[in-house]
Image (cartoon, rainbow, N blue to C red; front, side, top):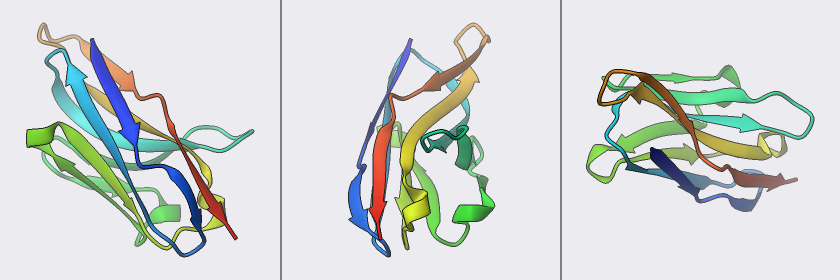
Length: 120
């Protein structure tokens, strides 16, 4: 089993910055992608950013130029640097990891979520 523990959420004023972290532990996993999603009340969960095994990144249009996803393989951690935050960025942010188990089975793991609130 793989555990994902997120941290770094909180309350920030519009225009401010936060950095989210997601630390992975547990069973061995051949990772394909690590990403961040968010879900605001009454809305679906949306992809925010993803980074692939080869280091390619992809961002939702609504965060391009403001958010940056990165990873530290030695620490088994993925980060989301969020700058120029807007009230509409308010949501619960979830870490996601997709990969294959040691036996080759596809796996999809989620963190517990961390609240980000941006005040106007």
